[in-house]
Image (tube, rainbow, N blue to C red; front, side, top):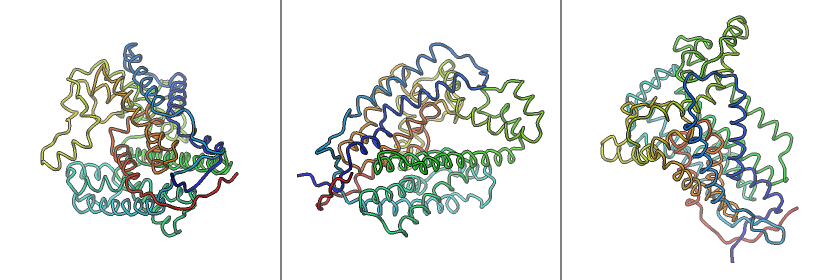
Length: 439
């Protein structure tokens, strides 16, 4: 007989799980992005070919179809209650927090001792030093273990929801490790990890509120809005700091930066920004966020038309194991993007770009298979195995950001996904008394 640790009203569980259902997230993400793409005040500087657009849509449609195949259609309900299968939630959360905290400390050691990054707020200088030093065994272990820090606080929230809360000091430790993990990333001028972690925690907060009450409270909704505004504020600050170090004004940046290569503001907008000294720079910074979101689609169209190198057969998608093998063997096994014809290295090309570089016309089939597999954590949640909640949350973030960037290509996406998939195997099952369903 399966032991259960907690029972929830079926309607509450259904509302919560609907929040992170992969097919539903795909529909919303593509609809919102598509509407924004039609109305955004941007002017493409590259041809937008019909074949490229159809290819982009087909790959994402196959990805969504894969998520639909892999996701169950209904909950397993007994006596109008949804049951969570018993596992040692408290010990799992403690392991997650401990591994994450260890990883953050190791990342600090690697960054400032092994690679010799300077203690300065100059993002460009820090990035150059760290990049030139390369990543050794310590760096790889630090990246893999510190990624657990992104789920420590979420694991603590889950233990509370399941009736096994951690001590307050343990939750504080989880929050400190999370903050350190984010600061190490933003210290190099990157905003992607900040975005990933904020989305993880916002989705988790809404999920657990719906689980408890059947809906999210107004306070939670306001908190989500506040967190998004804070995210925008931090992104603006990072953007201004990087521009200051490069000696560019915000208005110059939206015309000259790498992300502005395929998109340009209209001359009317430029004139309006230049004519308002007080609000011009702020308006340019806000507009840069718009370019940040939408330039990847046009970059993909450019990549699709200009790519002339052989397809990489998975080298882009499998960069983490290739990097690990490279560290072990002492040889670089990763693809040098600078050697590929028609590629603008380190520029977002949405989820579809790397798939196109890897598999060409077979990318739709790869997307189908990939998201059948990525729907597995959600399938386990629906079956009551909530050890897989962090993995389901990370997949949700991957889907939400898919029209903008592929998180499989970056450390801020790949390592948290690997950590989340590992977490269920750190959780042991146990035999405990049942809890009754509370309405």
